[in-house]
Image (cartoon, rainbow, N blue to C red; front, side, top):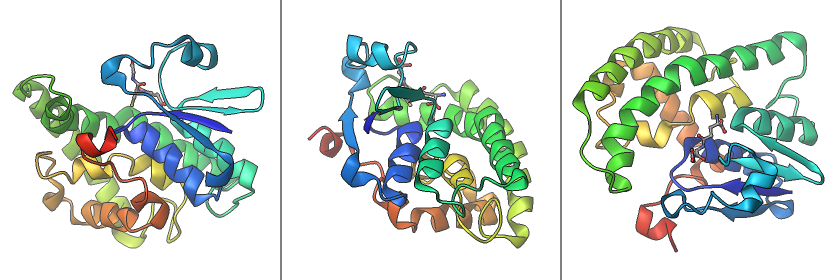
Length: 216
Ligand SMILES: N[C@@H](CCC(=O)N[C@@H](CS)C(=O)NCC(=O)O)C(=O)O
């Protein structure tokens, strides 16, 4: 298999972590693009993803883009029933939390950390405080939902890690970054959940590196 990714990207991290968690490292070639250099605007990437975005997984003659379906594909390919349930309720729960994180929770987190962490890391100018405030309002609203949900479980679907956690927790490193301004201390169960995820070996192995190191 071949996986196209980039550094400092929660979408790339979740699929890299899934590859590692499911034991596919040995059979997966990783192609990294530097988005700041426009490397993803290549014909090679366009041939496998007309959006010219990463991540993309190519498995034989099947190319798949969008991070969450890639993780599910890998989970099913591995036959990892606990991590990626195929029974009706589990499957729908995964879909529910993936829809929620894309549309609400990580959209809010992404809006905040783009301004507070990523722009600086990429040298893209000063943070926009209006956008940060809007992101914080949304974050507080949806983090409260997750906080309540985690009152009696360690992970999103219960007490075991599933593919839904690599989706919901995908922004963990950026959210916990000292510059992020994300009010995790107001959501102790969400905070503990993100720490728990960071302790999962495959997740820890894909932690973002500082830009200089990542460029090596
Ligand atoms: N919904 C997509 C998002 C993919 C995405 O936005 N990727 C970013 C990197 S995190 C990208 O490739 N950006 C380059 C561009 O938009 O030109 C997914 O889940 O994979």
